[in-house]
Structures are given as C-alpha cells and as structure tokens.
Image (cartoon, rainbow, N blue to C red; front, side, top):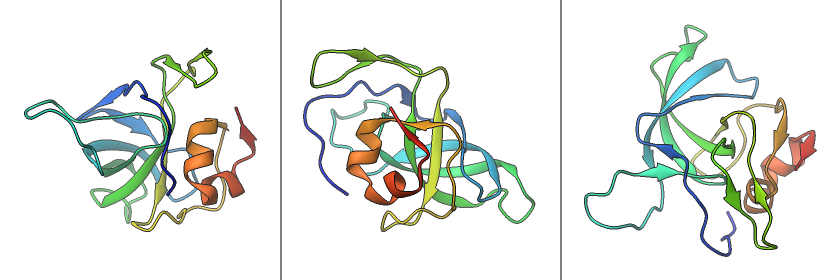
Length: 132
C-alpha cells in the first residue's frame, strides 16, 4: 500500500452498504471499520477512494454471507478533488475484496476503478479493466 497525497473527501460512513464488484461471490458488504484512520475522537469513521476497510458480507453466496472481510473502495458517488484541481464523482459506490496484505481475492473487477485506488494498490490496478 502506498500513501496518498492531499486530503480526500470520505463519502462512505460507518454502516454503509457497498456493492462488491469482483467475482468473489459477495454482492453487498457493510462497512464496519476503516483501517489506518487517524481522526478526531468520537468522529464516525468514514472511508474514501483507496481506503482499506473491514466489512461484513450482507448478500452473496451462502459460503460468503456473514463473513468479516477486508475491502478497498474503488469508486464513490461523493465528489472529491484530485491533486490537479479537477472534481470527480462516479455514478455508484463500489469496493473490491482484498486480503489483509492487499492482495485481491477475485480475478476480475467490473466497471472502472479510480486512479487514486489504482495508484495506492498495485494489485487492483493489475486486474482492473478501466482506470479513470
């Protein structure tokens, strides 16, 4: 995992239901906690593009349901500013399941992946079809 420059807008708060866009069998995951989040005391944790978080699988195959997994946000609907000053937003939220070390659990990703997530997680960039 590489560090990211600048401040990003975190658009997915605790408890958010996020579609999983890989082929691991999970369809919908719920955000439990954000890894490596250093923030103000008693502030509700939120995840943004490129953040790793802990999630619970809410919908999916029977062997995946109710498992606690790690995931990375690859798209978010809330607009955020890039380093060059442009604002970007996607039409949906999306996440990809990963191992605690950052290895992708699936073998393909449906839809585009944000450049911030691809730069921070090289294994996600390797299997993504489109990087925006």
